[in-house]
Image 1 (cartoon, rainbow, N blue to C red):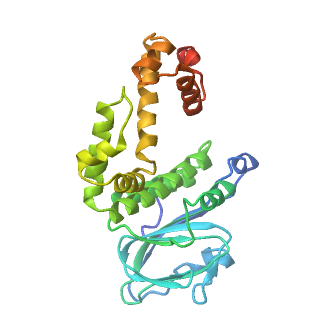
Image 2 (tube, rainbow, N blue to C red; image 1 turned 180 degrees about the vertical axis):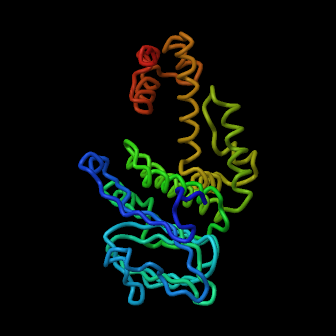
Image 3 (cartoon, one colour; image 1 turned 45 degrees about the horizontal axis):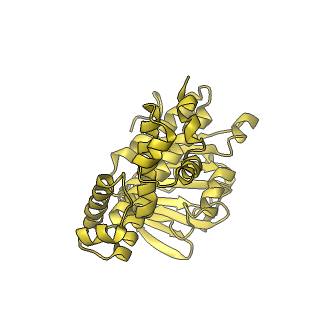
Length: 298
């Protein structure tokens, strides 16, 4: 990890204020840090450097913010939402605002802990939309250089505090969340899911100008249509039909950019009704196909 020059290699911490401009983003980075807890050391070290709400380790803490911690080395425990988890290298702990949790390393091993705190209605909305869940507070990622690189990026922004550092730090936090959720989803899915999805995409691509028959595609792959739908949606977060429509619209955009008329584009994409195509195109892109090329002009 590349902590800022001059920082202690075993301890780094920033608690950050936010301006009114920052708050308009709907998301702010509130704090970030790194702690190397040596074996047989008291946890947390440098406890007086933390605000009072962050010190209550023994009885558990209730924080006014989200936190994501990544344990890169050592072992410990994490208690949250009525469950206890064994923390090992590569564990990710997610703490939610207003929810009690407790985390500490094993006294004999210590641990290396990377953490970032954040808040705002944007992140609260991620709970409401089901992207983040209080039922999923613990992830086993294993050793993961990409996660450490994202923490490095956050530490750089909160240390230098260059213009719009809050925006850049929050962008990195979103990347961290995406990396955790994406890697977790891939780990939970059997390897053959990817092969099935790629085969389905291949057959849809071959028939991009026609009318898709998902039952025929499922038959070619060797599974039932319902199974294809379930696997495809689990892997991509969209149904096969939604994906098929998206690639049709993307191809239609290319044709319109080549001065193909709307009527001809609809025909080439397998739409018998030009007006149905136009309505679908506008719903997907926000722009009528007749105005698409004009929209792209600088």
